Image 1 (tube, rainbow, N blue to C red):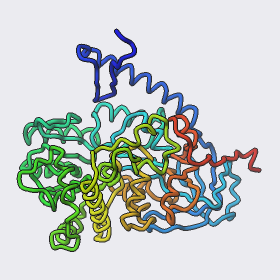
Image 2 (cartoon, rainbow, N blue to C red; image 1 turned 90 degrees about the vertical axis):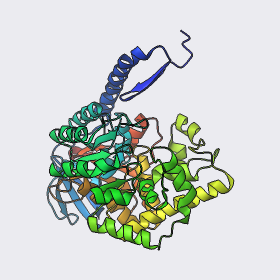
Image 3 (tube, one colour; image 1 turned 180 degrees about the vertical axis):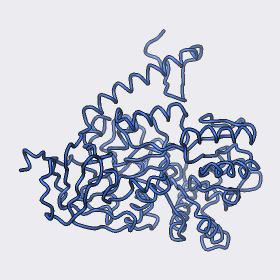
Length: 488
């Protein structure tokens, strides 16, 4: 065999291999997983810094996520992986074992990426960006559960991992993750499988038969689970909400409610091209938009816009840099820099202008939902970690104030993930999932990129070390942690 030619690339749930060698896929995937895990375990042992005893972050301003307000400065104490106290500076004679200078810095609750597709190597990028919790929405069931266990045990670097149970209908367009079902009864059995394993949510996908949504949603709700997902082909988002959806994923799925045409098969690329061609004409003040927003608000329907996943698709011209990566262009690995100028669509001239106007309309719709009181959560469906920063920048570009964008990425995520009792805000007794950043992202949202220390359940990580381990140039230096011997 010519060893200079491509042979294969594999990871759990995906493989491309030279024809005739398909029987090698399982062994190649197994070897890849073992090698990757060995590398990540070594990284975790090298970069994770447990903080025994009592730790204080001194004189730091901190973000009150439920109120979307900056408070402090305060001393924030951590012990046993939890927040022990939040008090006025220098008011406790507590003799901490570890001291971190927070002056001029901002402490945020750990960020939530509510729409990820997790692979083991993505965990370090999430943590480096301050993402301490992530939701997997379409993974291979066995791999998702394997990662959840290893991340929870602290064996691999990465966020707390939540998951939705993926259910797709059988068709020529079927995505093959999770369960692919051919009847309502098969769908109900898939829901029961997920319920028995502790899942709180199911995600329905494009090829689910529209008539199945209502009985499947009712079955999931009878188990205490919520229902999210793409809008099945030949339905509108309004129909899905009325049939039982608790959450809509992707701003294009929401926008299709107003522009999809009879006969459009949204299992195909028409779910993108219809938006690009027609969404710029959407009347944001029209009755249809107002009534749909009212329905979402009255039902408490959550929307996961992932606007960042569509930015380059709808706005990038071939040969020009990807706008989502441009702020970090000099920090990216060389292979990423090489791919920055390859656009997802071939757009030029008037078509490019039209698609850019349609993307602006999706931002307008995101702002309209927020102003109408529709609960939003921040997800990416794109680049781990740094993709969430761009998502928040786009919310602000749409017109959402920076502090409210931060609430969406912290408190809202915790509430929708069912984790608000333990995380999502800076309060005594909560898990110490925290991000210390240089600057104030409640004023300048781009400062969210400037994490200098991240805590997951009280274990400290220097983002600079994580980025370097993944081949990135750090954005800022890590914050110093002084031990008792050096602090006294």
